[in-house]
Image 1 (tube, one colour):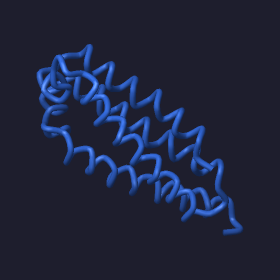
Image 2 (image 1 turned 135 degrees about the vertical axis):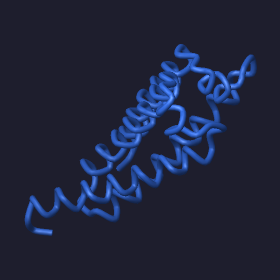
Image 3 (image 1 turned 180 degrees about the vertical axis):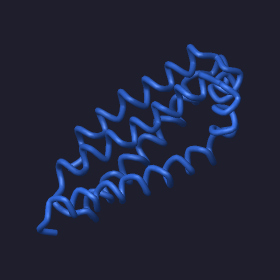
Image 4 (image 1 turned 135 degrees about the horizontal axis):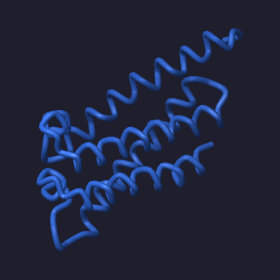
Length: 131
């Protein structure tokens, strides 16, 4: 792609489409319906979901910066997403005192904020390692 405007549009379009797909995957693994809970005003779910959105987009940012082709960027971003998804399961596993999903569904904002910050923080670690 020689035209930077076309290239930007291509990266943007693929990133938005992948974001929708990746969010759908997160929706499948959580025990609650993200958008239904957000519609009800559940701030904890809103924070956790916004952290996932930021995390996914941040990983895409690094993947685009470090790769010349759209396909390679998408491949690294998808790999980064798998790592972010693994972090979600690790977070759930490392908190045996309560269930993360249940607390977020019950609008426990402290857990929602923690979930958001884990997604955001780890996206920088994951992003820094994509090549």
